[in-house]
Length: 349
Ligand code: NAD
Ligand code: ZN
Image (cartoon, rainbow, N blue to C red; front, side):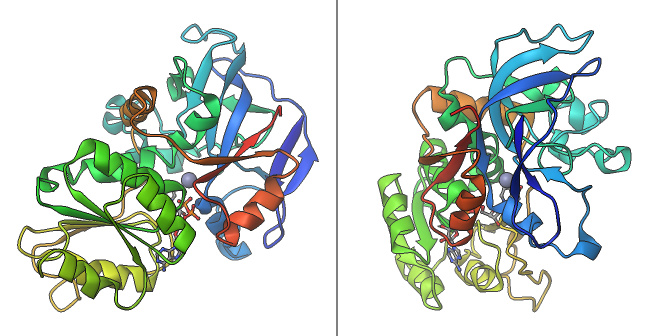
């Protein structure tokens, strides 16, 4: 089968021929219908050799949807032909957070060598992907696989990030979304569905701001040195109750710190892996009482909830589709900021 692999640190990903994997007892083989390209893949491919944590070659792709092609012995929870979404942040499956479905918080995964597909294990940018357990498959129940694939990360991650702040997103409140790419344009929609907050979207690109407006942002602002002052003005001087940063660079974290509200103990939630850091502590730059958090992906039940929202037509990912052979070119375009919404690869055309 064909697979998109990151093979050598510092080199572009390549489309290569590899054997179709066979499911061992307890495992499931998925025929991949659609797989999304995430900016995190670019971050991974930017890490230096001495810090690179995964074995190479690595088949990329941590956002996948497919149909069950074969099951290993003992697997009865899914049947051949069933359409499913792949839950990526695999945990040990036995500890307290895993039992709650919060496998993204499993404290044992790293020590056990359990790694997500595309982020350590072979991923979904291939004709087939091996899934370690049927526990990690959520039925699509009629959802379009192309629109569903990005929801497994670009939908799930902002959903998880927003949920923790919902008690602060009351009528009259303001939520700021910095970076309206794959995750950010879904964050805008999720905020509109889940809360009555006014949504202010920031990006450096006019096209992305246009998309933000189309998907429901009340205000769109260019992300520059004056952005925090404009947010303060828009909020009558108080600032935003919740700031979600999907970039995470020094410049955007500075905007987040300068635009979050002090009076209601606002939240700064950093989702982007932009390499910036936020100083927490007195004199650190954040207003008093503000909470800062850097969430990771989401839980299995949250994925079910995001898919439910999509099934109801309440969120919809903007996608541009590519063949497997075009994946390296799609990554280049993502790197150049030239993808609106999510790039989705269809390995079987
Ligand atoms: P993307 O490339 O689709 O979108 C990034 C957006 O940010 C683009 O619209 C770009 O124009 C905009 N941008 C860049 N610099 C900006 C600036 N200074 N101010 C405002 N906007 C700016 O990326 P994505 O796939 O949506 O991922 C977003 C980030 O989230 C990445 O850093 C990714 O690694 C990270 N991520 C984190 C998690 C997690 O669990 N924490 C999960 C998935 C992705
Ligand atoms: Zn991702």
